[in-house]
Image (cartoon, rainbow, N blue to C red; front, side, top):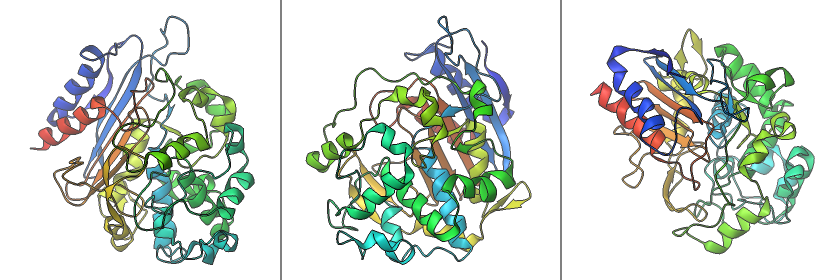
Length: 383
């Protein structure tokens, strides 16, 4: 199962780093699979994949060019992009109260919460006040009406507390109230469709045969040391008890879970963000005006997250580089990643995107060195 795909000679270091992920760390190419992609100036310069999709006992089924995988919170970058498009069209104001579009949301003293708070994890709604079984995530009305009724867990706008699952329901209900479409439908029509990108928020049955099997970490998620508020972090984790193997179920694939349920490969994640990296247009498709990208860099918070063991700097919809999170050497870059290690990075200064997805999840909630080394190799190639 050798590494497959294409890699521009200039980025040979990325190929070497990708190969090293299989042979130098705790993975081997025979029991895990992954893909990595890089776009530069709108062109796909790295498109590599390898390993196994882990769909049989001896893990002999290879990861193919069109293999896709649940990317967990890397989905948030595509959902945020859809919201940017909606705002650029003049239909969504990030500084407007959420209740302008979703009147029921004002209950529980939330009338002053603005859209930007939802998109920067500062809305105080990092979990459900009443326990939400995983099956409840498949009931859109239930999930969103519960969020609309509850009170925030801290003063909105004062700190970030990672809205790991709830953010997608909040953004998605805003999308539905404004457009009449689900976020997955809007993304397919206005974002991934025009680009011809193989990314899905809500997976149709015809794609099941090419979905790689998620290999979850051992044990349940626990509150790590270093979070800003252990009680809020625990409450967030307990509000919906998700385990990694839920991504292998049909119910999860079919549901629209815009913060954690997207399916794609690295090529799709890199290409969907290429227009953003290039000022709004790539591959002959304009998704955004240059002005429409600017909200991403409108800093909303910078400090210790209440739920994650990280100091985070959030713009609208994306994380931003900081000394504590030096994910890019350039100031006009943004990113986010998914549980287990997937990631998306968009660098407007370098006109670059980097994406990595895999089926073997790493430990913890904040990624691991597999993706980090691919980012480093990409920037070293440019240098």
